[in-house]
Amino acid sequence: MELLYASCVGVLVTCGVFLLLRARTFPVVLGLTMISYAVNLFLFSLGRLTINKAVVLGTGADYADPLPQALVLTAIVIGFAMTAFVVILSIRGRADLGNDHVDGTLTRSKRKERK
View 1 (cartoon, rainbow, N blue to C red):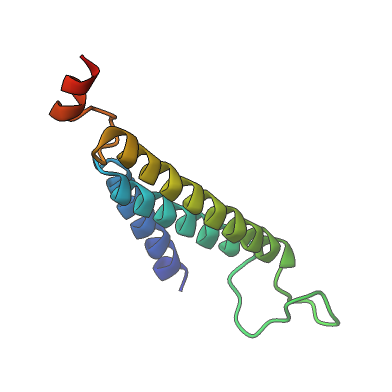
View 2 (spheres, one colour):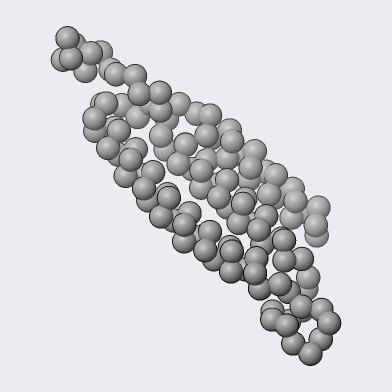
């Protein structure tokens, strides 16, 4: 189970980095989202991957640590806010520049307007 879990995190990070290196804004937003999912899974795995254990500390000796679960919930909220901000920023960049390239190059018509 640990190998499958680690490989899923690795695939998400790999796909996220690949999408971050694209020249368009939508793949960059998807890449950031995938990397945030991978970080959330990694944080969740810090609480030990156990099956059929109590969520909070009880009478048994084996329990799942609630701190990583709280960190993941917080990271989900922050990730959603970050994704909304980046989407609005990319929409504004598309409106200002006339294209959705990440490098910020102007189109030919915008260059002629500025001269």
